[in-house]
Amino acid sequence: MDRETRLFAERHYRGLGGQVPGCSGPAPSSVTFIQAPDAFSYADFVKGFLLPNQPCVFSSAFTESWGSRRRWVTSAGKPDFEYLRQKYGDVVVPVANCGVREYNSNPKEHMPFRDYIDYWKEYIQGGCSSPRGCLYLKDWHLCRDSLVDDLEDIFTLPVYFSSDWLNEFWDVLNVDDYRFVYAGPRGTWSPFHADIFRSFSWSVNICGRKKWLFFPPGQEEALRDCHGNLPYDVTSAELLDTRLYPRIQHSSLPLEVIQEAGEMVFVPSGWHHQVYNLDDTISINHNWVNGCNLANMWYFLQQELQAVQQEVREWKDSMPDWHHHCQVIMKSCTGINFEEFYHFLKVIAEKRLLVLRQGLKGDTGDSAGPRLGLQQAAFDVGRLADVLASVVAHPDFQRVDTNAFSPQPRQLLQQLEDTVAAAKAL
Image 1 (tube, rainbow, N blue to C red):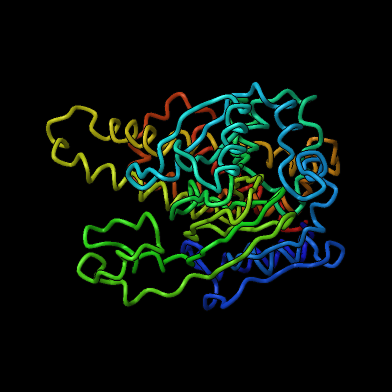
Image 2: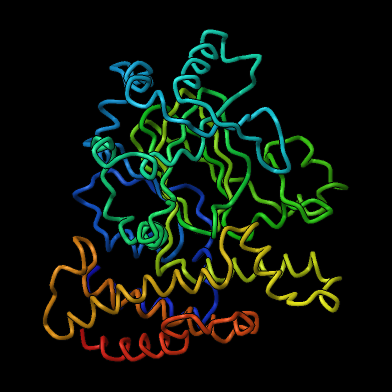
């Protein structure tokens, strides 16, 4: 990030006046296609898509050097089953049955990748049908579960997505990540959803084609049924029943995107979507959070806690430590609670503070890493300060036992605010 882009972004958030970032301007009628890597900078992406929270598609030229596009795919553009079986056959992978609805998702099982490849080949030979159902390999943590030497330059992280706090945090803990491989035959699909924690995501087709149906933030409200639930499948005929879906007449048509092999889709924060594989498809996908959608994540977590509190409200007066139990339930359901969110902020903040302290002394050192410069760190610290101020003021966070936290939340906030003031001259 250069200084001009940082100042542009800071003005953008000041203009929001503390409101949660949404989708700037009217919903687009089409998605911008970005053709040439040499003609599209990080600043272009920040100003044109990240800050206004708008989707875009990058051409296959952005991924043509990826090892996975050479090794995982045959000359005919199909999955190279023999190579994949040899390389990853013994790896146990998660597989969802797209033909079975379990709440608003699909039940999963685990199997060796070689068994899934056998199923996939049988599915193709059966005319895209199998008595085992329509099985989709989803959420395979290939990077997390592989040795570094085995990753064979699968992909190169695009600079546009390099400010990735979510995976930066989990890499520090060394227990998890939000980097996934999806693979499945024609007809596999993902039901209607918004991404975890209201993160951004990006998705690259290593081979195959996808159809995306996008709904900008807020448009999903017209798709709720009479019980307040979102649909499982936005193409279902049952949505035409106005008794079941009383607001459906206020809904808008989705924004449709066809993603070809090699192309990269940027999914903005809070955009609900539904995705279909139109051919035999393998994709690499990342969820990511940074300063541009941190407030969205914090707002989402507040909503999640409110939902938990609403569900167990009848025990509020009779259950000791009711507020603590709500946080425990939230962690179980959402994957993170207020305590862990603070630790997430702390890990990112301490790394940015170190970069800026060295930079303000004139010592850039090597702690910034290859991608994190002073301007990016200064922007990040400003966003961290804004969100942490909201966190420490929240009544439910004030009920969290922070005695063992180091630094204490208000101390960290003061460090951030002091550094924001000092970094204005950068």
